[in-house]
Image (cartoon, rainbow, N blue to C red; front, side, top):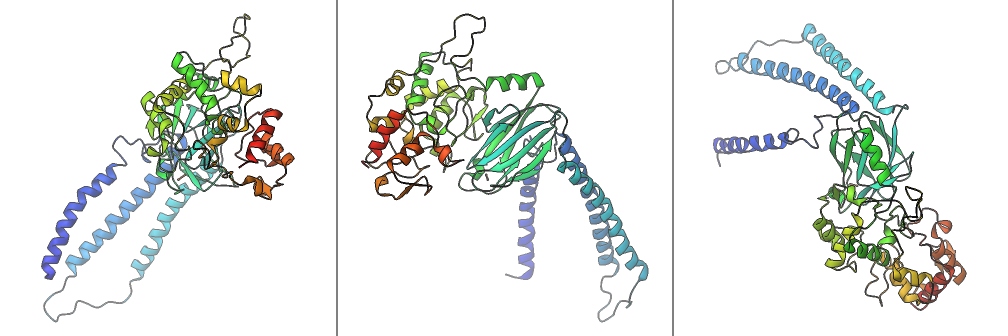
Length: 461
Ligand code: CUA
């Protein structure tokens, strides 16, 4: 290939690349739901002001430098063959100019940058909503510090009030980022970071984990719903009450939720026994616009598909597979989980009348509480299978906790915390957090008799 051919080819490629680059840049504009240059908060506007200053200064530098370069190329291009241009050495005026001008420009960039860094690093103390954002593989848990409300993947906040986000991680490093509301901040295991912003527009804002954290990093999304103070308060109240199933399908779903392994990993406020911490809190799931870490919309079909086979939707998800739930059962569970929330069992009735007793424990659970079930049945129905594998039980294929075959032969339990004696095993199963604070193993609220029966079963493995 000759040099001129090569250059011609390169030029053609450049013409193809140009619109492609345009498309990429248009990602910043477009509908712009994750645009960094369409801020909707005070901090967002402050950061954009710095961005604008730097961009305009850069454009000025570009025009001057390339302008001079083009002038030089034309004015001082080669003359006749063998003829040298005029030779010079040094130019004090030019040297002073190209030192002073950049120094002045740097001051114009540095001062607004510094003041914005101080602004973003100092959250307002008045009237702020404090939220703990905990990054987990691969979803976000949000805890409202003042009310203790815990939710997952969709953060509701009131408009025009400062939102102070403290980030943390329980596994690897993640990064909290809602491009239209704030900058990024890492969520680290063992160290808290703080970020704040005051949302100035109502609407739904799209967030994204911005630090590579494993298989489903790209699926670790979330949404921030900015709403009126009244709507925010209404939502906050709705997630302190359990779902109240309205249809026969939803009522069956409730029994399935308690009988299958769901409660080992998920919490629903007001539902005794549903206190799992491994997966997201599911209280008032019906109010969420999305599921599966904001990767799909929350429709009945999507929710049932997700419950039935989550791994086909989000690779690497810890929700166990195969979850022993048929497509039909998944539909019932979805109906239960999206039921409107109402007063918890035993809560005072609104008009001082009879107590609203909408949530009878399922018949199976009642029988179990009364004893009489063997250890294997208890193991299968109390949520243990959500996290543990036992080879002889096809339904026990959980991978969150240790496999339990050969437990009897192990010298220690609870990751080496306790010697493997019968008394210690009972103590561990009865109340895991009291043995090992922070453990993902939940206190299932088992009776002493149930613990004894399960331990007897475990010793046979
Ligand atoms: Cu979490 Cu990337």
